[in-house]
Length: 458
Ligand code: ADP
Ligand code: MG
Image (cartoon, rainbow, N blue to C red; front, side, top):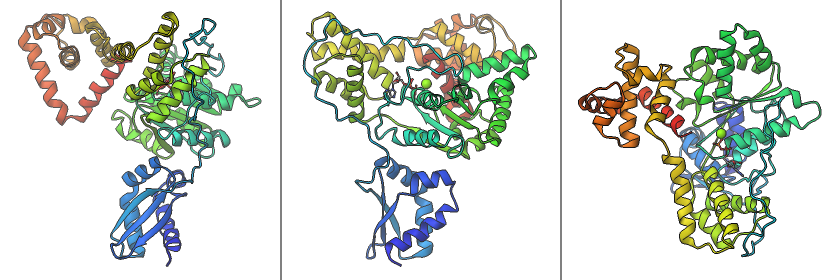
């Protein structure tokens, strides 16, 4: 067999073992570039870096095994990017150079708050036109393009996951807007955050209005749910979501979901729901690389009709790496300053803005926020945590609150003890140590802490 035939046969075998969407996305455009007979290494080419890493991490064993079944002289597989094989229109702007000039007065900074559509619940501010595509999100983008082209048919559900501020909400909403813009489609698309879904279900249960919920959520062609990780574990809501999901899925209605992590990493999610998610297309959005960060800064500057020294943009792009929301925040502040200072911005000032912005989003949290979040998480009254309440169901929440006050805010033990149930400092120390030790042995506890922290910082 020549390499081409060998690869064809190998893919035929692999195709039987992974889901079709995954096969199409990850392996359809792969090639066997060479087979080094002396070293027994097969070199597989993939269209981009992301696919290369993904395939290596997820499918290496499968690929090696399938290749060896056909040719046992192969001992290992290596992966490379085949250049020139781009499927996704790369809109990472090779932007025009930006003149070094301060902002003039007619440039208004605030992007007007556009109104949420009362029918779709989508915000028109989010469009695909303003969504910059780069290596960290090109597959997610491609998947949404496929969904727009064949709603309900191709990738269903589409499950996008990624960290905070990386563009999940933007991409979800822009996809919804694109679909809703087709004639007659507006009242067939519905977007919700999982918080809203939870509230709706809780309200409906209390008021015996479940029929309303069913009508609202099941009578659509496209249901988009943002931040699904919060639904897990709230039994009634999760159950209602499960039925909604099935009702839609059975009728080939499109479901698009986002989460801050893959389904397998949402421990509170019931197995059957998780396996439904895994039956569709799962794609992640990673951290933007430098080129993409710069492209985003340039696009936003242009959108605002502003001008900023290219060196300043370079500097911001180099320093703000893990969160596009922060990247925008820094840019807005810098533009504001440059407008009001007549352009005299030095790198030191920019660094100040950067550290302020990143500090605000990562540290501006106080003890009451933490206690309140813990109480809400466990659905117990705040006062049960702060009073001497001895009910069994507040023991764990209180210990977790104590742990977080120490872990996040570095408060003193006497202060923590006083704040949570007027205990003495030994109780606080004991709680901290107990939780800290249990974390490494108890993944469920670990997840609870992560979820609570995320809510605290939200
Ligand atoms: P997430 O939902 O993942 O927390 P968001 O979608 O809210 O993140 O994105 C945070 C901010 O960054 C938003 O203002 C969004 O418009 C912007 N943003 C994110 N990704 C991109 C992108 N690829 N191109 C342009 N803007 C982006
Ligand atoms: Mg979001």
